[in-house]
Image (tube, rainbow over all chains, first blue to last red; front, side, top):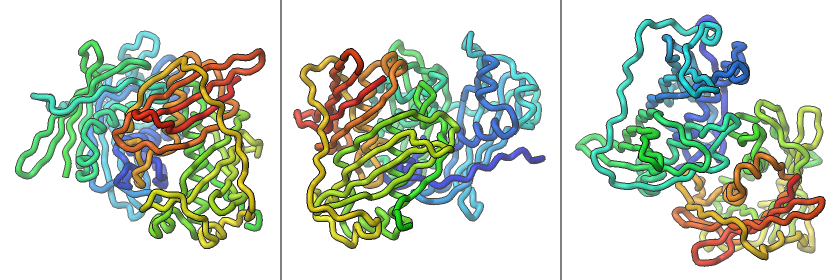
Length: 246
Length: 246
């Protein structure tokens, strides 16, 4: 445990796959979050304990890169490690490996600690973070933001449904990814594979609210990128992302 | 293996729970289907083999009863057994048990075998069904149909999204359950627990199609029942259900 890496074995099941038969991007992030939650339990700082003291981790950004998405029935291991933290941010790395240990995907995630009553960011204290063993940082990591849309090519509306919210009454962060990708049509999604995702969460949506998911496609000689923005009904930006495809 | 029951251990994870912190009805059915799929692999008649010979199992009806829905992190076992079959139907039972072996939920499901090319029901041959060991029946089971709506009290529209379809390009049967329940509002769903579900599948929806999910509430002295119907845009009934609550 000196390296502080937590390992979660998993076998991909049919409802984690998309029409291409491969693990969907949203479910990949779900599995990674599961490893992070399991580590909390393993080190004696589970989410329930944090919630009981009026706090909760909230994701502000994911930077994901994908080499290959596993298929139904494939056995994988999800690894995670809290790498570093400063006063307000905790950084965590994730790896998805196949049975041979090859890295299939990597993710770097920034979390903040929320005061559940005031819904404001609160300072990360050592009792909360020390069990995970990350390095203290004086600085804040400068993570590139997703590029913003210059024009909207496709847009669809989504309403936050009952089953989109979890026991903390939050919309699971993975639904934003699905709302972003669903706007691209089936042919596009069947014919392209995501290579990288940079997603930044700005304002949380709540049950019953509607949002508009907008897309712009950028095609260059050797790269295909889609830019995504989700807006709340009042025009507030909820979430933005940039996806690279092959 | 003489009893032909397949057992799948599972631990409930956070994204299988709903805002009440308990396993959602849709995810419960997903887990049961997983046990059925795993049994196919275990007895040498996996879905992939069936698909390769141009056939696939399709659900026509679920009859589910629930004693208690397990919570996040709870360890459970899903059991399944193909109980009986006739020329056109196969019947399968499912049990969800807690760690002490107590039954938390039971389900009886009717399947038909589809010719994937013609999309028509095809006769169940013994090579397909014998590995599961069900009893041959001469008759067809008479399963009660869900009661039909007399008036529509609530209705919402849903569009089949990319991530609602699986690698067979079908809408996972569980999404119909979510479209039915989501129409009831959050307060209702937070304050009531499902005791029984009878759901009958009539016409499959495809990617991009929209449907309308309609509900009627029936309150009697000692029972609360909701009736559900999902209609395709052209007015065809796609699915109907009856849910009893406590």
